[in-house]
Length: 460
Image (cartoon, rainbow, N blue to C red):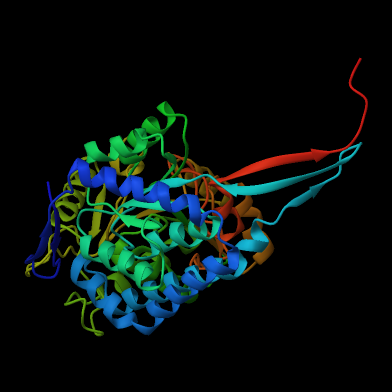
Protein backbone atom coordinates (compact mmCIF):
# COMPACT_ATOMS: atom_id res chain seq x y z
CA UNK A 1 0.00 0.00 0.00
CA UNK A 2 1.22 3.57 -0.59
CA UNK A 3 2.49 5.78 2.20
CA UNK A 4 -0.40 7.89 3.43
CA UNK A 5 -0.50 10.94 5.66
CA UNK A 6 -3.80 11.11 7.57
CA UNK A 7 -4.68 13.57 10.33
CA UNK A 8 -5.51 11.46 13.44
CA UNK A 9 -7.57 14.32 14.87
CA UNK A 10 -10.25 14.09 12.18
CA UNK A 11 -9.35 11.15 9.92
CA UNK A 12 -8.86 13.32 6.83
CA UNK A 13 -6.27 12.28 4.24
CA UNK A 14 -3.57 14.91 3.85
CA UNK A 15 -1.37 13.39 1.14
CA UNK A 16 -0.39 10.04 -0.37
CA UNK A 17 2.94 8.84 -1.76
CA UNK A 18 3.55 5.89 -4.07
CA UNK A 19 6.45 3.50 -3.64
CA UNK A 20 9.52 4.28 -5.68
CA UNK A 21 10.39 1.92 -8.52
CA UNK A 22 13.10 -0.73 -8.29
CA UNK A 23 15.15 1.35 -10.72
CA UNK A 24 14.87 4.37 -8.41
CA UNK A 25 15.85 2.20 -5.48
CA UNK A 26 18.94 1.01 -7.33
CA UNK A 27 19.89 4.61 -8.07
CA UNK A 28 19.52 5.51 -4.40
CA UNK A 29 21.72 2.61 -3.27
CA UNK A 30 24.33 3.44 -5.89
CA UNK A 31 24.36 7.08 -4.78
CA UNK A 32 24.73 6.04 -1.14
CA UNK A 33 27.67 3.75 -1.92
CA UNK A 34 29.32 6.44 -4.03
CA UNK A 35 28.85 9.01 -1.28
CA UNK A 36 30.36 6.69 1.30
CA UNK A 37 33.61 6.51 -0.64
CA UNK A 38 34.17 10.23 -0.01
CA UNK A 39 32.18 10.73 3.22
CA UNK A 40 34.31 8.21 5.12
CA UNK A 41 37.44 10.26 4.36
CA UNK A 42 36.02 13.55 5.62
CA UNK A 43 37.31 14.72 8.97
CA UNK A 44 35.12 14.73 12.06
CA UNK A 45 35.25 18.52 11.98
CA UNK A 46 33.94 18.62 8.41
CA UNK A 47 31.07 16.28 9.21
CA UNK A 48 30.34 18.22 12.40
CA UNK A 49 29.77 21.41 10.41
CA UNK A 50 26.87 19.73 8.60
CA UNK A 51 25.37 18.13 11.72
CA UNK A 52 25.62 21.36 13.70
CA UNK A 53 23.98 23.26 10.87
CA UNK A 54 21.14 20.72 10.82
CA UNK A 55 20.71 21.07 14.58
CA UNK A 56 20.57 24.85 14.27
CA UNK A 57 17.98 24.64 11.49
CA UNK A 58 15.78 22.38 13.63
CA UNK A 59 15.98 24.78 16.56
CA UNK A 60 15.18 27.70 14.27
CA UNK A 61 12.08 25.97 12.86
CA UNK A 62 10.77 24.10 15.90
CA UNK A 63 7.16 25.12 15.29
CA UNK A 64 7.21 24.07 11.63
CA UNK A 65 8.58 20.60 12.38
CA UNK A 66 6.27 20.18 15.37
CA UNK A 67 3.13 21.24 13.50
CA UNK A 68 3.84 18.72 10.74
CA UNK A 69 4.32 15.96 13.30
CA UNK A 70 1.08 16.82 15.09
CA UNK A 71 -0.81 16.80 11.80
CA UNK A 72 0.61 13.43 10.74
CA UNK A 73 0.63 11.31 13.89
CA UNK A 74 -1.40 13.28 16.41
CA UNK A 75 1.28 14.07 18.99
CA UNK A 76 0.18 16.93 21.24
CA UNK A 77 1.85 20.12 20.07
CA UNK A 78 3.87 20.78 23.23
CA UNK A 79 5.19 17.22 23.16
CA UNK A 80 6.01 17.61 19.47
CA UNK A 81 8.04 20.75 20.16
CA UNK A 82 9.93 18.92 22.86
CA UNK A 83 10.76 16.08 20.47
CA UNK A 84 12.02 18.47 17.80
CA UNK A 85 14.32 20.23 20.27
CA UNK A 86 15.67 16.93 21.63
CA UNK A 87 16.29 15.66 18.08
CA UNK A 88 18.31 18.76 17.31
CA UNK A 89 20.26 18.33 20.53
CA UNK A 90 21.15 14.75 19.56
CA UNK A 91 22.63 15.92 16.26
CA UNK A 92 24.68 18.58 18.03
CA UNK A 93 25.74 16.12 20.74
CA UNK A 94 27.37 13.76 18.26
CA UNK A 95 28.88 16.63 16.29
CA UNK A 96 30.68 17.57 19.51
CA UNK A 97 31.59 14.14 20.91
CA UNK A 98 31.99 11.71 18.00
CA UNK A 99 35.73 12.17 17.56
CA UNK A 100 36.42 11.53 21.25
CA UNK A 101 34.07 8.53 21.30
CA UNK A 102 35.86 6.92 18.35
CA UNK A 103 39.41 7.87 19.24
CA UNK A 104 41.96 5.00 19.13
CA UNK A 105 42.30 3.08 22.39
CA UNK A 106 45.75 2.10 23.56
CA UNK A 107 46.22 -1.51 24.67
CA UNK A 108 49.05 -2.93 26.74
CA UNK A 109 50.25 -6.28 25.37
CA UNK A 110 53.15 -8.11 27.00
CA UNK A 111 55.36 -7.30 24.02
CA UNK A 112 55.33 -4.47 21.49
CA UNK A 113 52.54 -1.93 21.15
CA UNK A 114 48.86 -2.24 20.21
CA UNK A 115 45.75 -0.14 19.82
CA UNK A 116 42.14 -0.42 18.69
CA UNK A 117 40.93 1.93 15.98
CA UNK A 118 37.43 2.55 14.64
CA UNK A 119 36.35 2.90 11.02
CA UNK A 120 32.87 3.13 9.43
CA UNK A 121 31.23 0.07 7.89
CA UNK A 122 29.49 1.72 4.92
CA UNK A 123 25.86 2.00 3.87
CA UNK A 124 23.41 1.30 6.73
CA UNK A 125 19.72 0.49 6.31
CA UNK A 126 17.54 2.00 9.04
CA UNK A 127 13.88 1.02 9.52
CA UNK A 128 12.16 3.49 11.83
CA UNK A 129 8.70 3.84 13.46
CA UNK A 130 6.10 6.57 13.50
CA UNK A 131 5.75 7.28 17.23
CA UNK A 132 8.73 9.68 17.35
CA UNK A 133 9.09 10.72 13.71
CA UNK A 134 12.19 12.92 14.20
CA UNK A 135 13.81 11.54 17.34
CA UNK A 136 14.03 8.04 15.88
CA UNK A 137 15.80 9.44 12.83
CA UNK A 138 18.11 11.73 14.79
CA UNK A 139 19.34 8.94 17.05
CA UNK A 140 20.62 6.96 14.06
CA UNK A 141 21.61 9.89 11.85
CA UNK A 142 23.58 11.76 14.51
CA UNK A 143 25.97 8.99 15.56
CA UNK A 144 26.22 7.08 12.30
CA UNK A 145 26.81 10.04 10.01
CA UNK A 146 29.46 11.35 12.39
CA UNK A 147 31.05 7.88 12.45
CA UNK A 148 31.46 8.11 8.67
CA UNK A 149 28.64 5.79 7.65
CA UNK A 150 25.84 6.80 5.26
CA UNK A 151 22.16 5.94 5.70
CA UNK A 152 19.26 4.73 3.59
CA UNK A 153 16.08 4.95 5.66
CA UNK A 154 12.63 3.39 5.48
CA UNK A 155 10.37 5.44 7.72
CA UNK A 156 6.87 4.38 8.76
CA UNK A 157 4.13 4.62 6.15
CA UNK A 158 1.93 6.98 8.19
CA UNK A 159 4.54 9.77 8.61
CA UNK A 160 5.88 10.29 5.07
CA UNK A 161 5.93 14.08 5.32
CA UNK A 162 8.03 14.00 8.50
CA UNK A 163 10.42 11.61 6.74
CA UNK A 164 10.75 13.96 3.77
CA UNK A 165 11.23 16.95 6.07
CA UNK A 166 14.12 15.27 7.92
CA UNK A 167 15.88 14.33 4.68
CA UNK A 168 15.45 17.91 3.43
CA UNK A 169 16.87 19.19 6.71
CA UNK A 170 20.15 17.37 6.15
CA UNK A 171 20.33 18.39 2.50
CA UNK A 172 19.71 22.02 3.49
CA UNK A 173 22.47 21.65 6.07
CA UNK A 174 24.93 20.68 3.33
CA UNK A 175 24.92 16.87 3.42
CA UNK A 176 26.00 15.47 0.03
CA UNK A 177 23.61 13.40 -2.05
CA UNK A 178 23.67 9.85 -0.72
CA UNK A 179 24.68 10.65 2.85
CA UNK A 180 21.08 10.35 4.06
CA UNK A 181 18.37 9.00 1.75
CA UNK A 182 14.69 8.61 2.57
CA UNK A 183 13.24 5.54 0.82
CA UNK A 184 9.51 5.25 0.14
CA UNK A 185 9.59 1.48 -0.35
CA UNK A 186 7.52 -1.64 0.18
CA UNK A 187 8.32 -4.53 2.52
CA UNK A 188 9.49 -6.57 -0.48
CA UNK A 189 11.84 -3.78 -1.48
CA UNK A 190 13.09 -3.62 2.12
CA UNK A 191 14.18 -7.25 1.82
CA UNK A 192 15.97 -6.31 -1.36
CA UNK A 193 17.86 -3.57 0.48
CA UNK A 194 18.92 -5.92 3.28
CA UNK A 195 20.13 -8.46 0.71
CA UNK A 196 22.15 -5.88 -1.23
CA UNK A 197 25.90 -6.40 -0.72
CA UNK A 198 26.47 -2.64 -0.57
CA UNK A 199 24.46 -2.49 2.66
CA UNK A 200 26.67 -3.37 5.63
CA UNK A 201 24.34 -3.07 8.62
CA UNK A 202 20.68 -2.88 9.63
CA UNK A 203 19.09 -0.90 12.47
CA UNK A 204 15.40 -1.29 13.30
CA UNK A 205 13.09 0.26 15.85
CA UNK A 206 9.63 -1.24 15.73
CA UNK A 207 7.38 -4.11 16.68
CA UNK A 208 8.44 -7.57 17.78
CA UNK A 209 7.17 -9.11 14.53
CA UNK A 210 9.06 -6.57 12.43
CA UNK A 211 12.18 -7.20 14.48
CA UNK A 212 12.00 -10.95 14.00
CA UNK A 213 11.59 -10.56 10.25
CA UNK A 214 14.31 -7.97 9.70
CA UNK A 215 16.78 -9.55 12.13
CA UNK A 216 16.34 -12.92 10.42
CA UNK A 217 16.97 -11.38 7.00
CA UNK A 218 20.04 -9.54 8.25
CA UNK A 219 21.28 -12.72 9.89
CA UNK A 220 20.90 -14.69 6.67
CA UNK A 221 23.14 -12.08 5.06
CA UNK A 222 25.61 -12.12 7.98
CA UNK A 223 25.07 -8.40 8.57
CA UNK A 224 25.35 -6.62 11.89
CA UNK A 225 21.99 -5.47 13.23
CA UNK A 226 20.49 -3.65 16.18
CA UNK A 227 16.88 -4.12 17.26
CA UNK A 228 14.91 -1.78 19.53
CA UNK A 229 11.54 -3.44 19.90
CA UNK A 230 8.62 -3.25 22.30
CA UNK A 231 8.42 -2.99 26.05
CA UNK A 232 6.16 -3.68 29.01
CA UNK A 233 7.93 -1.59 31.59
CA UNK A 234 7.21 -2.06 35.27
CA UNK A 235 6.48 0.95 37.48
CA UNK A 236 7.25 -0.38 40.99
CA UNK A 237 5.86 1.61 43.92
CA UNK A 238 7.32 0.59 47.30
CA UNK A 239 5.48 1.16 50.57
CA UNK A 240 7.66 4.12 51.56
CA UNK A 241 7.12 6.05 48.32
CA UNK A 242 5.81 9.61 48.31
CA UNK A 243 2.51 8.99 46.52
CA UNK A 244 1.94 12.68 45.78
CA UNK A 245 5.28 12.74 43.95
CA UNK A 246 4.62 9.42 42.25
CA UNK A 247 1.18 10.11 40.73
CA UNK A 248 2.24 12.85 38.25
CA UNK A 249 5.07 10.60 37.06
CA UNK A 250 2.65 7.65 36.77
CA UNK A 251 0.31 9.68 34.57
CA UNK A 252 3.16 11.06 32.45
CA UNK A 253 4.87 7.67 32.26
CA UNK A 254 1.76 5.99 30.89
CA UNK A 255 0.10 8.79 28.94
CA UNK A 256 3.03 10.66 27.35
CA UNK A 257 2.63 10.45 23.56
CA UNK A 258 -0.82 8.99 24.25
CA UNK A 259 0.92 5.90 25.64
CA UNK A 260 2.59 5.17 22.30
CA UNK A 261 6.10 4.80 23.66
CA UNK A 262 8.21 1.64 23.86
CA UNK A 263 9.61 2.57 27.27
CA UNK A 264 6.35 3.88 28.71
CA UNK A 265 5.26 2.76 32.17
CA UNK A 266 2.79 -0.02 31.40
CA UNK A 267 2.59 -2.34 34.41
CA UNK A 268 1.98 -0.55 37.70
CA UNK A 269 3.18 -2.87 40.47
CA UNK A 270 2.27 -1.43 43.86
CA UNK A 271 2.91 -2.79 47.35
CA UNK A 272 -0.22 -3.60 49.34
CA UNK A 273 0.39 -0.95 52.01
CA UNK A 274 -0.08 1.91 49.50
CA UNK A 275 -2.06 0.13 46.76
CA UNK A 276 -5.47 1.58 47.60
CA UNK A 277 -4.18 5.14 47.89
CA UNK A 278 -2.23 4.86 44.66
CA UNK A 279 -5.12 3.32 42.73
CA UNK A 280 -7.61 5.97 43.87
CA UNK A 281 -5.34 8.90 43.02
CA UNK A 282 -4.11 7.38 39.75
CA UNK A 283 -7.69 6.74 38.61
CA UNK A 284 -8.73 10.30 39.43
CA UNK A 285 -5.74 11.73 37.60
CA UNK A 286 -6.46 9.69 34.47
CA UNK A 287 -10.12 10.73 34.57
CA UNK A 288 -9.07 14.38 34.63
CA UNK A 289 -7.34 14.20 31.23
CA UNK A 290 -9.12 16.24 28.57
CA UNK A 291 -9.31 14.92 25.00
CA UNK A 292 -9.13 17.45 22.23
CA UNK A 293 -7.35 18.82 19.18
CA UNK A 294 -3.65 18.05 19.69
CA UNK A 295 -2.81 21.42 18.13
CA UNK A 296 -4.31 23.17 21.16
CA UNK A 297 -2.15 23.79 24.24
CA UNK A 298 -5.15 23.08 26.49
CA UNK A 299 -5.51 19.50 25.24
CA UNK A 300 -4.14 16.92 27.69
CA UNK A 301 -5.21 13.77 25.85
CA UNK A 302 -4.63 13.43 22.11
CA UNK A 303 -5.55 10.82 19.51
CA UNK A 304 -3.82 7.59 18.62
CA UNK A 305 -1.73 7.58 15.45
CA UNK A 306 -4.01 5.47 13.23
CA UNK A 307 -7.43 3.91 13.31
CA UNK A 308 -5.79 0.47 13.08
CA UNK A 309 -3.89 1.20 16.29
CA UNK A 310 -7.12 2.27 18.00
CA UNK A 311 -9.02 -0.83 16.91
CA UNK A 312 -6.21 -3.12 18.03
CA UNK A 313 -6.14 -1.57 21.50
CA UNK A 314 -9.92 -1.81 21.87
CA UNK A 315 -9.74 -5.49 20.92
CA UNK A 316 -6.93 -6.09 23.43
CA UNK A 317 -8.94 -4.51 26.23
CA UNK A 318 -12.03 -6.53 25.34
CA UNK A 319 -9.96 -9.73 25.33
CA UNK A 320 -8.49 -8.86 28.72
CA UNK A 321 -11.93 -8.29 30.24
CA UNK A 322 -13.28 -11.47 28.67
CA UNK A 323 -10.40 -13.33 30.32
CA UNK A 324 -11.28 -12.00 33.78
CA UNK A 325 -9.63 -8.58 34.12
CA UNK A 326 -11.55 -5.79 35.82
CA UNK A 327 -12.08 -2.62 33.81
CA UNK A 328 -11.70 0.19 36.36
CA UNK A 329 -11.73 3.02 33.86
CA UNK A 330 -12.28 3.68 30.15
CA UNK A 331 -11.91 0.93 27.58
CA UNK A 332 -13.98 2.62 24.86
CA UNK A 333 -13.57 4.80 21.83
CA UNK A 334 -14.30 8.46 22.51
CA UNK A 335 -17.35 9.71 20.61
CA UNK A 336 -15.74 12.39 18.47
CA UNK A 337 -14.02 12.55 15.07
CA UNK A 338 -10.55 11.07 14.89
CA UNK A 339 -8.89 8.17 16.66
CA UNK A 340 -9.39 8.86 20.34
CA UNK A 341 -9.54 6.25 23.09
CA UNK A 342 -10.50 6.78 26.71
CA UNK A 343 -7.68 6.54 29.26
CA UNK A 344 -8.04 2.96 30.42
CA UNK A 345 -7.11 1.10 33.60
CA UNK A 346 -7.20 -2.68 34.10
CA UNK A 347 -6.80 -4.65 37.33
CA UNK A 348 -7.14 -8.30 38.45
CA UNK A 349 -4.98 -9.55 35.57
CA UNK A 350 -4.02 -13.18 36.07
CA UNK A 351 -1.04 -14.93 34.40
CA UNK A 352 -3.35 -16.79 31.97
CA UNK A 353 -4.87 -13.52 30.73
CA UNK A 354 -3.42 -12.35 27.39
CA UNK A 355 -3.04 -8.89 28.97
CA UNK A 356 -0.41 -10.34 31.33
CA UNK A 357 2.01 -10.86 28.42
CA UNK A 358 0.91 -8.44 25.74
CA UNK A 359 2.16 -4.92 25.20
CA UNK A 360 -0.54 -2.23 25.19
CA UNK A 361 0.76 0.47 22.84
CA UNK A 362 -1.57 3.25 23.86
CA UNK A 363 -3.45 4.78 26.82
CA UNK A 364 -4.01 1.51 28.71
CA UNK A 365 -2.50 0.92 32.17
CA UNK A 366 -2.33 -2.41 34.03
CA UNK A 367 -2.41 -2.39 37.85
CA UNK A 368 -0.98 -5.14 40.05
CA UNK A 369 -1.12 -5.38 43.84
CA UNK A 370 1.76 -7.25 45.56
CA UNK A 371 2.61 -8.03 49.20
CA UNK A 372 6.31 -7.12 49.32
CA UNK A 373 9.43 -6.03 47.48
CA UNK A 374 10.47 -9.53 46.42
CA UNK A 375 7.06 -10.22 44.88
CA UNK A 376 7.23 -6.89 43.04
CA UNK A 377 10.61 -7.75 41.55
CA UNK A 378 9.48 -11.26 40.59
CA UNK A 379 6.42 -9.84 38.81
CA UNK A 380 8.47 -7.16 37.08
CA UNK A 381 10.80 -9.86 35.75
CA UNK A 382 7.94 -12.14 34.67
CA UNK A 383 7.76 -10.53 31.25
CA UNK A 384 8.92 -11.44 27.77
CA UNK A 385 10.13 -7.85 27.40
CA UNK A 386 13.06 -6.13 29.06
CA UNK A 387 13.34 -2.54 27.89
CA UNK A 388 13.00 -0.22 30.89
CA UNK A 389 11.35 0.24 34.24
CA UNK A 390 11.27 2.39 37.34
CA UNK A 391 11.13 2.07 41.13
CA UNK A 392 9.70 4.61 43.56
CA UNK A 393 10.88 4.93 47.16
CA UNK A 394 12.09 7.53 49.65
CA UNK A 395 15.20 5.38 50.21
CA UNK A 396 17.45 5.95 47.19
CA UNK A 397 19.89 3.19 48.18
CA UNK A 398 16.98 0.75 48.37
CA UNK A 399 15.77 1.96 44.99
CA UNK A 400 19.17 1.23 43.45
CA UNK A 401 19.17 -2.28 44.95
CA UNK A 402 15.74 -2.99 43.46
CA UNK A 403 16.79 -1.52 40.11
CA UNK A 404 19.77 -3.88 39.99
CA UNK A 405 17.48 -6.89 40.43
CA UNK A 406 15.09 -6.05 37.59
CA UNK A 407 16.03 -7.63 34.25
CA UNK A 408 15.88 -4.75 31.77
CA UNK A 409 18.18 -2.59 29.69
CA UNK A 410 17.27 0.57 31.64
CA UNK A 411 16.02 1.30 35.16
CA UNK A 412 15.12 4.63 36.75
CA UNK A 413 14.86 5.45 40.45
CA UNK A 414 12.25 8.10 41.34
CA UNK A 415 12.07 9.35 37.73
CA UNK A 416 11.54 8.13 34.17
CA UNK A 417 13.82 10.66 32.53
CA UNK A 418 15.29 8.80 29.55
CA UNK A 419 15.47 11.80 27.21
CA UNK A 420 19.18 12.58 27.39
CA UNK A 421 21.55 12.13 24.45
CA UNK A 422 24.29 10.93 26.81
CA UNK A 423 22.21 7.97 28.09
CA UNK A 424 22.35 4.69 26.09
CA UNK A 425 18.89 3.42 25.12
CA UNK A 426 17.99 -0.24 24.54
CA UNK A 427 16.81 -3.48 26.08
CA UNK A 428 17.08 -7.24 26.42
CA UNK A 429 14.84 -10.27 25.84
CA UNK A 430 12.05 -9.50 23.35
CA UNK A 431 12.87 -5.80 23.63
CA UNK A 432 15.80 -6.41 21.31
CA UNK A 433 19.55 -5.91 21.39
CA UNK A 434 22.10 -3.19 20.81
CA UNK A 435 22.09 0.37 22.07
CA UNK A 436 21.43 3.80 20.64
CA UNK A 437 22.58 7.18 22.01
CA UNK A 438 25.48 7.88 24.33
CA UNK A 439 28.96 6.55 23.69
CA UNK A 440 27.57 3.06 23.08
CA UNK A 441 25.29 4.17 20.25
CA UNK A 442 28.08 5.29 17.98
CA UNK A 443 30.02 2.06 18.58
CA UNK A 444 27.38 -0.22 17.05
CA UNK A 445 28.30 0.12 13.37
CA UNK A 446 32.05 0.64 13.27
CA UNK A 447 34.85 -1.80 12.57
CA UNK A 448 36.95 -2.13 15.72
CA UNK A 449 40.33 -2.99 14.33
CA UNK A 450 43.27 -4.24 16.33
CA UNK A 451 46.66 -2.90 15.20
CA UNK A 452 49.74 -4.41 16.86
CA UNK A 453 53.35 -3.41 16.19
CA UNK A 454 56.63 -4.90 17.41
CA UNK A 455 59.64 -6.96 16.51
CA UNK A 456 59.75 -10.40 18.10
CA UNK A 457 61.04 -13.76 16.91
CA UNK A 458 58.66 -16.10 15.15
CA UNK A 459 57.37 -19.02 17.22
CA UNK A 460 59.45 -22.15 16.86
